[in-house]
Image (tube, rainbow, N blue to C red; front, side, top):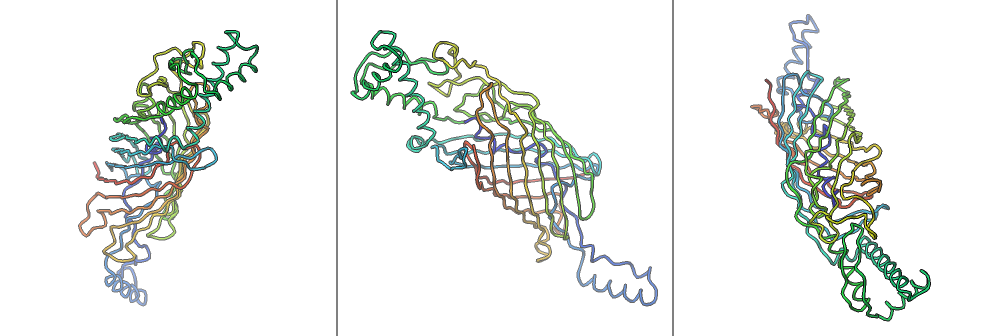
Length: 452
């Protein structure tokens, strides 16, 4: 459950960094002044001037690529509000399954950008989780493969401990014979005194003296209880600091590189599993590459990829299996426990990748009324590095693929320009692997930019 917000919090390092809205004009409309011509050239120039006056002022396009940096001395403040929902997970083979969870989460972020030169921009991103709720459907959870695997593990452990107890009492000769005796007792639904059951966390629970099949049913309830979520943590998420530098910036090609650090300001270490943290607990480095191709004045085609590398591992306290709303207070090193400490390291081994392919189209060609408008569509991917708690792999690496569609209304395209815009984006999950909970989202972004 700790990874339910990872997709939601993919405000990746430099993820909000871009440029001011495009002020591109149709270059083909430009004509040399008639005063610089003579004879036939002057006549042609006058004719072009007349045609230009008929056409009106040069068109403005609200579209822009991903790699443009802010002009020197300009700053931009953005408010990004993201609303996410999800109820389906994906296993290691890419098979979708409903685990009984239904996520509703809201994230808000403030991004502050500043152009230190025409090619060099700085970003500070402050995300905030304002809603982090998961409804739980026990019936659907018990129909899932995850539930069946967990119950099988509990029942197998219960049988092994029961067989060991019978052998210690001299009621059977060896482990094989004792295992057969336990199967017979369960098949006959026998009632026998049971020793306390030790969980992997070192916690113990006592099963009542009752028919064995009733006790096995109680083990199933333990699995359900351990998986039951609560209202999630809210508050500040992990904070991003980043820079971007434009190496190539021509009319048709823009190539920029960026780097950033994500710092673990979000709640993580002391948050029980059922409540889902607002951060990831790691210090991470992001290295970003942007390439924009501008084949036509209204259209930008962009590719962006960010490589993410863990710099410093995090720490997480184990949660109780009897009550996942609490941290574990028992000793996991006792006999029957798994020996893993209550304070565990959290790490990612390998390099993760986050990126997108995007097309951004200004609508001024269709009508002058649509001059402030642009539409966009993108294919997005997230390939996370494998996650470990201690030396135990908890996820071999999430793979998520989605598409987005949206539009932007840019104040600079108005008759009386205003330095602000509104952007609306809808993202839909396509497919993935090792995904605890896939999310669809709706984003509204407001921005204001100005110069010092």
